[in-house]
Image 1 (cartoon, rainbow, N blue to C red):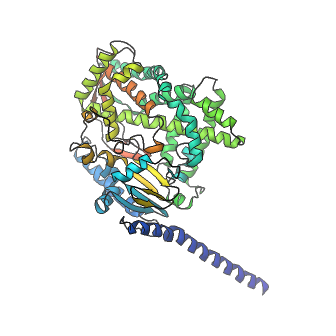
Image 2: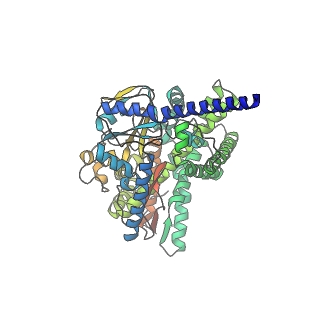
Image 3: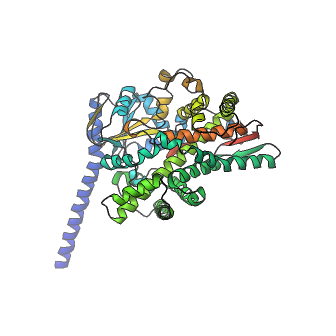
Amino acid sequence: MEVATAVKVLLSLCCVAACGFAVYLYHVVWVAPQRVLAEFRRQGIAGPRPSFPYGNLADMREAVAAAKAASASARRSAGGRDIVHDYRPAVLPFYEKWRKEHGPIFTYSMGNVVFLHVSRLDVVRDINLCVSLDLGKSSYLKATHEPLFGGGILKSNGEAWAHQRKIIAPEFFLDKVKGMVDLMVDSAQTLLKSWEERIDKNGGITDIKIDDDIRAYSADVISRTCFGSSYIKGKEIFLKIRELQQAVSKPNALAEMTGIRFFPTMRNKQAWELHKKVHKLILEIVKESGEDSNLLRTILHSASSSKVDHSEAENFIVDNCKSIYFAGYESTAVTAAWCLMLLGLHPEWQDRVREEVHEICGGRLVDSQSLQKMKNLTMVIRETLRLYPAGAFVSRQALQELTLGGVHIPKGVNIYIPVSTMHLDPKLWGPDVKEFNPERFSDARPQLYSYLPFGAGARTCLGQGFAMAELKILISLILSKFVLKLSPNYEHSPTLKLIVEQEYGVDLTLTKVQRACRA
């Protein structure tokens, strides 16, 4: 009898606990987000109606599936060569639909996470001007992306972010970048030589899928300039980081809603294993590094002087190295591939840049002074970054209540600025906004609040000067030696995998030119 009573009591307690958890979950996933959405509605800001418990996630998935089917059908009918530079309807169709329905500023939700989608210029301006630590990096996807970024500078907030920026920023100042130019030129030699050999082997013309070669160049630049090692040593790190990027590129709704990322799903186990391997490989590079002054030595010095235990110091080193590897390697390589694709489409601009390189170099080595004089090349790269910015969004989070552009934003709201929408606004850029026209950058710098390829505000990319130098060196040397045409094998299909990249790679047809800058 006593056992039966104890069982009943236990069952009752379990029922009470289950009911309590259900009520708590309902409050967290539904009631709290609805209050935030109601606050925005009182300000005249609406959005699509969410559904319990996943908010607007089902609508987003449905729109993506429909867009993929339509895009695949269009590519088949056009033979894969229908190149439209506005990738938003194919990659981000739900935003396009909601923007048409609700205007340039609207809300939506994913589980318990509320988003404010902003392409209204006054709000974007205030985000750019805000230097308060109360406006931080969006925490959405932080749980999913933790194996890739950890607590490094790309994902940290508040004092932790400010400390890391203070350490890393000086390593990318202009004087430091100028000192890296020779190493960047050297890193291009392997790529140039391999392409020349392939052209010679194939009778003076060859088709090349350039993506892996460009990534190898970018990886070698990062390895040599920032970590004092060659691409040969760092090759496995880059390959594992690329795999890790693929593993975490898809949102995990359960992890983002609950913060729990420890379920042993196949994808989680793959990410954990890759994280362990990258962690080990980076620490091996650290042990082998010399005393030369570079970014790695700066990070190591900061970690050793901090009052933290050994494990925390290791995580600080590894997380920031992973962030630099990813940001400096993947984004730059993808931008270079987009730029070469556009030049293959536009031989008139290819000729202009090639002639400019010849006139400035005059048979001499490319150096920091010659790079500054390459105006046509700079215009081409800026236009590439306008049409194909690596980052699809500038993402921020209100860590405290804020008012931006007259909009009151409750604490915890994630703010997303769609970079491609700002870059394709005809009111800001003119009626030819969807066309490749580098001339738009010939007279003046773009408006601060409408051009966001390197982010916005206090968290603007630290390495933009480094990236521009790297891109200029690579593109100038390639064009000085090769004539590019878009290969018949090329299939245009932008896709979002943390950054906007080419799903099937970039295929170019290359021939050699006789007149070249000496590299």
